[in-house]
Amino acid sequence: MDGVKASVLRKVDELFDEETHFLREMVRRPSLRGETNLVQQYIAKSLRGHGLSVVEEGLDLGKMSTMRGYAPVDWSYEGLVNVIGTARAAAPGGRSLILNGHVDVVPIDPIEHWSVDPWGGDVVGNRLYGRGSCDMKGGIAAAVYALRAVQSCGLGLKGEVAIETVIDEECSGNGTLSAFANGHTADAAIIPEPFPYMVTASTGVIWCRIRIRGRGAHAQSASSAVNPIEKAYVVIKALRELETELNRPEHRHSSFAGVEHPCNVNIGMLHSGTWPSSVPETCMLHVRIGYQPGIAPVEMQERIRQAVLGGAQRDEWLRNTPPHVEFAGFLAEGWLVDTESEIFTLVERNHEQLAGAKPPRQPVTGTADNRYFGFAGIPHVGYGPYGELLHAPDEWVDLESVRLVTRVLATTIIDWVGVIS
Ligand SMILES: [Zn+2]
Image 1 (tube, protein in one colour):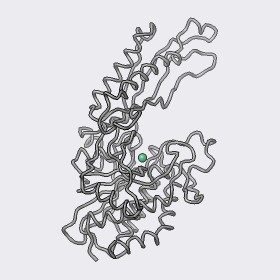
Image 2 (image 1 turned 90 degrees about the vertical axis):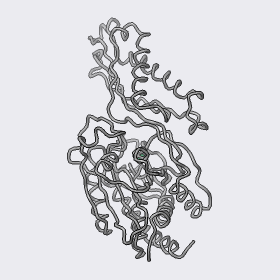
Image 3 (image 1 turned 90 degrees about the horizontal axis):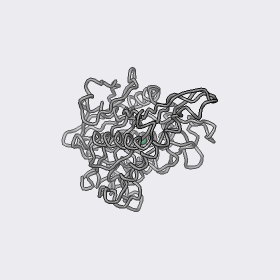
Image 4 (image 1 turned 120 degrees about the horizontal axis):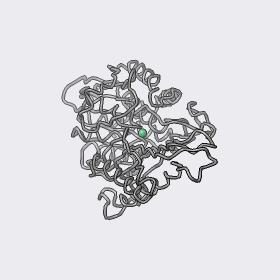
């Protein structure tokens, strides 16, 4: 360990209480979809306070809609922004780096299932609790404080480092796509999502909605009506068959060879009915489907449509009243990480030196915004803090792991970008 790194690591430890405060303050600003501005304003102010050059940019659908990876959505981005804070190079000759993280979080409901305040940022031992603490405000705190530690040691950067805090990662990825549409790029990127390992690959993720028509009636004649909730069983069975097909070992992408069940189909929402004594007219399923890398999103959309309509053929009512399948939100293809790239090797090696053991390498069965860096030919890494109960009540992040990731990112900035003292 050279002297420069040793002093930066000491600085990480010195700043740790402030970093924990910064993380807690982010968690205390609820940032559900469409409500991300409070946290973005807080981050923008903090980055400016650290001397970064900060822009707050809206999402321009016109620019993005023809780009690879664009996901059509039916919610609005009006008034919402990404924040991009850039530390300029003090000397030439280095390579640039983006540290990208999403500020949007998933809903907390039902709040009664939480034993802590989901927006409280309570610290108990090494755990900081709250929605988004792990996914992924902990990673954002690590990125911000890694750069801060390097800069507050008086080291000049030889290349630009940008912190991108983006929106809409949990439902489309259009936030990061927008940053590309606005010209933000770099020689490498790290996304400190809650992956306490080196990500090697990711499944694709598609969201779809399936509208099932029934024939409503007074419940007194329910036996001669058609209840669309019960018809949803037929559709769910068809989706489960598709899931089995997607997971067959012979269809498995080599990067998921050791994973038992990479492709998960989740019935995330079911909406139907208005009255116990009325047979509903419609039932809407909101479904998330994971699929192997190497399959194009349009091909997967077609397979989903065929699976649902094929299943409907087995039911007399659905054969004549086919479910309607539509797509909005995630249209993410699976992605692979170049594990030979220099940035990957640096992160892996720095983790090994600081933690005393190599981080495992493993594929993920969700997704992250890494794919956009892949589309742009930019080497990228998925690696971040450890925590549990993401997307569930009592989410927490391990603060010691946030500290370790901060140390790894700080040393990787030094190695990749280069510094002058
Ligand atoms: Zn995430």
